[in-house]
Amino acid sequence: MIVTRKKDIDSIREHLADARSVVIVGCSECAAVCRTGGSEQVKEMSGLLADRTVCATISIESPCDKRITSRDLKRLTRELEEADAIVALTCGSGAQAIAEVSGKRVIAALDTSFLGMVERLGRFYERCSQCGECILNDTAGICPVTLCPKQVRNGPCDGVRADGTCEVFEDRPCVWRTIHERLSARNHPERFTAYHPPVCWSHHHVPREELQGH
Ligand code: SF4
Ligand code: SF4
Image (cartoon, rainbow, N blue to C red; front, side):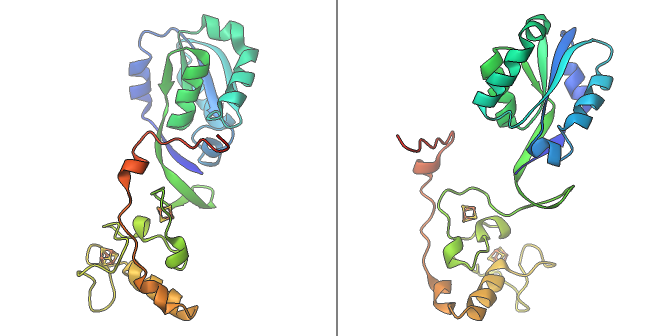
């Protein structure tokens, strides 16, 4: 799930200074779970922008999916023509999909933080940094690229403390120690020394694309 945070309303107002009419678009998937772009937050944004014309509000299921966004925005053709801008309560991918589909100016109302694991509403953890060359099968399912502050793929580093804590954050265990413990408990300690070459960034430079089936 994509974790998002609300932007400060003053910064949104600043970008909308010359927009007298808007359409507000929410996301009923990730941003709804984050409580940043669900129907309640769309309503809240509508109230915050009540000093201008809100031509329409809509919650789209997965606005990052251009097929769905295109289909749903067709229902608002007239309102979109009237609007000076669209306010997107979505992740950055959603905001750009809305802009590409509508051809309108889109103001992003959220900051996109990370790919999150959900424990419960309002509690999200980063567990994958999307390195593109996953080593979880050698690390007992624990991602050192994300959990080690130095992103060490072959660890531990020289700084691990004698008590097994991380040299950067002394209140945390070294993730490579945790990996060793779990691999040993699973009777696969040999995996600990598996070598992981550096990520070949020439294959993973942004923007990335996945063209499956082509
Ligand atoms: S190694 Fe970590 S960052 Fe890379 S793909 Fe796997 S879980 Fe994600
Ligand atoms: S002590 Fe472990 S977790 Fe901390 S930076 Fe070094 S390898 Fe990473």
